[in-house]
Length: 496
Image 1 (cartoon, helix red, strand yellow):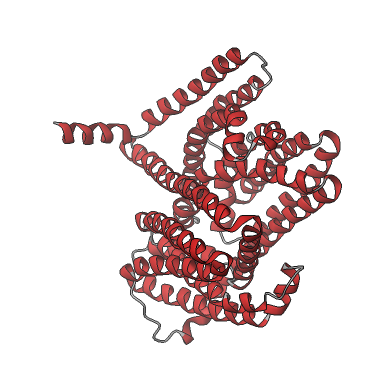
Image 2 (cartoon, rainbow, N blue to C red):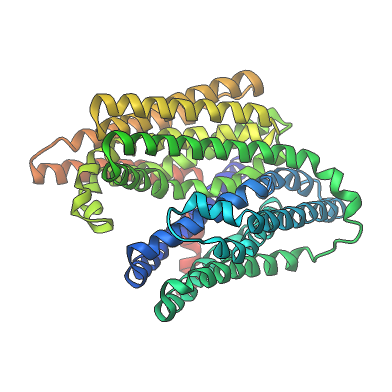
């Protein structure tokens, strides 16, 4: 591969990781504003009602959607790279047919199970009517998921970014006025309207590229079986992951109390969720691309390694900053009562280095359609996580849960790498090893600085570590990509 082609490849990964990372960051910021306003308008009880209804509806959606929103991406991306427009249009019809089936199934089950869901989710009152009224949300989520998969597989990445931005602003502008005027009575209308807005934005963009055509859809149902098989494995894996988190939180609740669960959850959100915004691009951009070359070992290795390199270089300066700034960020984002979780979150943040190296390799298993292997690997990780959190808490309390999160990602990287190496002949490139050996020690140095008690020395050493990590990443990315030159050319063109 020539130098120009190599730079273009790195530039693509960097560009879309930056775009979707920025969009995810915007989503988080707007989400924080929205949650703050909603909390003021509804109070704790109203927020709890929103959370319970939302989580139950999301569970119903995931359980009935058959994972099509994820598995369809692999199949569409494979066909998309062939350039056969007729095959693309036909398979999109298959995806839409299955999404329509799952939408109707999800709506029907949600309405029928209304009394069961009410009894399971609430210890007070009868909320059956709310679940019946929210049944259309399950259907809309299925349609939205299918159209999103089509846009991902067809590489309509700018459209996806614009949809995410429009949806997050729509949620803000819909929810705040309704809650202001109607209070808790507006919860069901808000959930319905937000889901409708999200579906409308997605459908409009998707139908623009691929107009709706369900003629002869009955005969194409059987063609979606491989897609559904992979999707079911993805759903089961998600259920196992949710089950693991439920077991962990139940254990902490029984052993230490509800306050401790709140502290653990805050630390988890600050590290895994917020740092994870960098990984959004992997599902949106990287997964379709690696799916399209899943039969070519050399091309797959090259794509995986470049994704790891760029992910490591982008996330490393963020992690050093997060580790060192958590004592300031925690009171800003939560309150001073969450101070005990700082030490746990600082050590847990180190796990994201290993997640940045694990995810691109793990997606190869999905790209190959090895649903059973993916399920077993993820189940093994979930079991490790639960066991390590229990051991970590029993030994070191809240801090031990942070060590457990990091240790589980280290072991997950080892399992996934060994399997990919033996099964798909994947090998980490020299650059991956070099960048890991460069940035990982800086991350652990940042963590070591957290033990410095002198405030000024803490600031000086912390700033030095962050600057070193950022400078190394910027230098390497500048050398590897052509984006910097393009930005300079645009600036000169505008001001020339």
